Picture (cartoon, protein in one colour):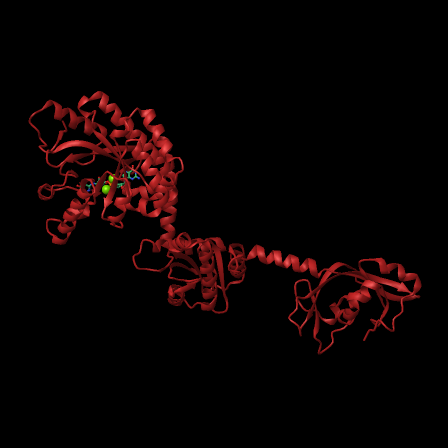
Length: 581
Ligand code: C2E
Ligand code: MG
Ligand code: MG
């Protein structure tokens, strides 16, 4: 329709050729009267589209939001009607090609030329900037590695859907965490780990159909929004299908890698005001799976919510308890089986709660672990136990050689300065490292076996004894005992409990005692409750024991009573206990 060949620029307007913007003058019929050089370069071919909706046409003009325009809304039509455009952005879309859209910013208004009303229009090609913006926008909302939407995008998407959701519409948010991903990363390297995540992203997208958003939240965590689920049953079926897809082997470079996943499900949308809460509940459901053997998905239920608020409450209370000095230590004697004499104590923490009375560790240690409060709590316990034992040693000379065992949480081992902290406490309390034993569970060793080795060796070099606590409840792998510098094995009470009836248990107990011997480790049997247990351990020639038969854990006054009685009377009400010579 317009042809630059039959269009001649009036001499006096040639000055506009030097401008970076396109300048166009159009008469009331949409015919160009003038185009400067830039306009001839990039706008000429599009003038028709800015004036008329031609059907059929490959080109379409859209507003900056991507909405198509009616003819009356086209820029040239608007200007000629008297509208003023100020740097308004439009998209020119070519339906034939799959090329990126062409963006222009237009300004213009009504003017007069040669005594007639005309539209005067200036335009600028802003495609490069727009494409760059789009790229940045995409980057800000997508995970670079997998190309999947990221957390920001996911939250935004779910919030938008929540704003429009009908109450009868059922949806689900899935929170997924990979099992053993860290192992892949650590053993096969990050390149293989990255490849795994990329392939997994593709699998997940392949599994879920339309009206679903798959996002990578970070690390090995993914979230999925399912917009069309009929209810819990369907959400579970999809979770199961997802897991089926995940457990198929991955071919990564020359490796065949198997992983698994835990999937937490939170159904919505009516319960939720915002995406964060919804995702948090799916996360909480996922977290619960860790406590459910052989389960890989779990649906959030509101009792979890209650648990969570209870946990927050007890976290706050526990924090205050630490600050206000409501924690106490009780001490349980550890006894040599053959001579029935006390060789030391284990410090066990209690919480003197202002309203609930004396609380056992089972009621607050998990909260302390989950919130990180176990770290200050653990240091308090260590210092108090060392201080107490040192004071007793000075007060009662017969206690001067007894040992103190203190439980250490795996969380404490993630502290960089653990060894220095222990040194500080020993220096402050003047307690000898040779009388201190630290108990760690098997979980500590498995979780960070590399870094922990150095720490354990440093502690042992200081003269501190190291014990494996609750042996037999965790991985029960004797293999690591060779590698780590332990002195003592505390056999979990579940082995002692039924050893008199359960032949298999007895056999295990027997072989553990023998193995410990071969490795040069002392053995302490936990949970010695009855004479039968005692007789059994004696027969097995297990060295030491700890349990209600000898004594329950006692408050400091109880220990002092025990010690003074032991010193003052020959007639023992408790024939089991005497202090070691
Ligand atoms: P643990 O280290 O294995 O401590 C032994 C537990 O067995 C104690 O429970 C003790 O009271 C109990 N026990 C002792 N003899 C018998 C018996 O004959 N029969 C039965 N059924 N139980 C017996 P408690 O005091 O409730 O402590 C439980 C766990 O809490 C401890 O197990 C330990 O893992 C943890 N814990 C206690 N104090 C601390 C602490 O200061 N720091 C850390 N990180 N954990 C602690
Ligand atoms: Mg212990
Ligand atoms: Mg134990």
